[in-house]
Length: 171
Image (cartoon, rainbow, N blue to C red; front, side, top):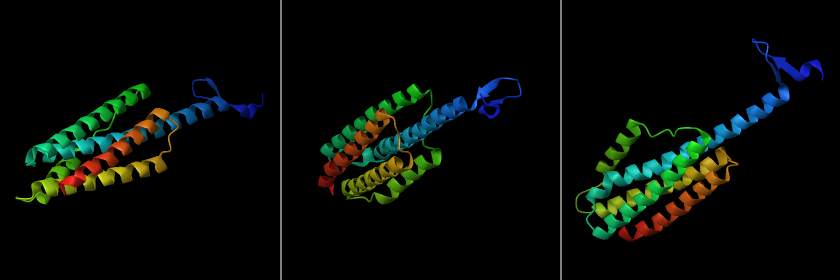
């Protein structure tokens, strides 16, 4: 072994550079996966918040049922995401208060009396399209090697696309 194959710490513990690099690569991968999951979590959480902000303003019972079904789908994906966080020994980062308040205020401003269902459907489609776009950005920014996380992102994308189609009939 050559002298430059290892480095020592202040406590006299010897770390081999190759071990440090492997550990660093592991932590970097894990960190990317956690960022990836946090972004997925926030998209799903925003979907739930968006539905909660408008569901009581719907006029048609079938539209309300659709939104409740979509919220249940999001909750299921949220639970799957939380399970992945646990496997990483990490905690999800929830949306901040200001983001939640902004969502509520935007909903209030966009919903006009008389055509609530149409306005809600438009808002939900816009938000869902933003979610799809964000997932594509996440996949490009944090390419993950975690198959479960990729599968979850694909499931969310499919859910969002399907939700848009379901919402269109209320325009």
